Image 1 (cartoon, helix red, strand yellow):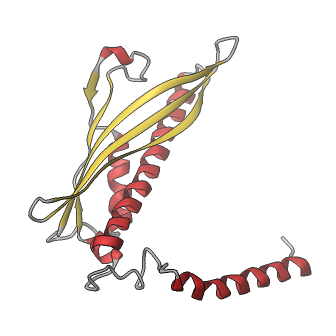
Image 2 (image 1 turned 60 degrees about the vertical axis):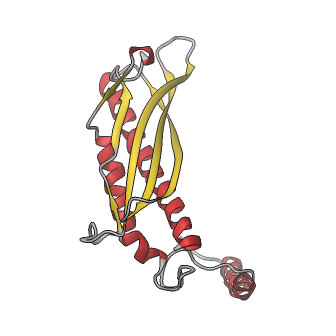
Length: 199
């Protein structure tokens, strides 16, 4: 890829604008959410340090009793599912890439539920679109068991079903992977926001 003179000028102007905006953002009370500058109101630690002190429990997992969600009326069944593991690992990497804390100051618990909703069906009936909806109820507690944050969030990913068993299974697994990683980001952002304002 070659850079033109115009591209270089644009990049330089953008950098200058960011530098000029930094003092204004600081004056408005803006500060980074992560890193050394993310000191909490108590001034004793950064947001990153508080995240690293959170022990993340294995998520409790529920999904439709039918393997691919076609029969939601069939009730719900508990699964030790790959999605739960992906979410758990993504949260652990996001909160503390060096591993779980030996003496945690906080505990994060999560309840998951999954649903698959058919959204569009082709006229021939041989292809359709589905939404995979992954919901999480999560709670952050301190070492004494006091509830600090209790919220719910969800992630939705659409994918195509082609009536081919292998391709469809791969599409659903990819959707589960993406929804789990998106949920991990949303949960981390919410917990980080709590520490930034109450830590």
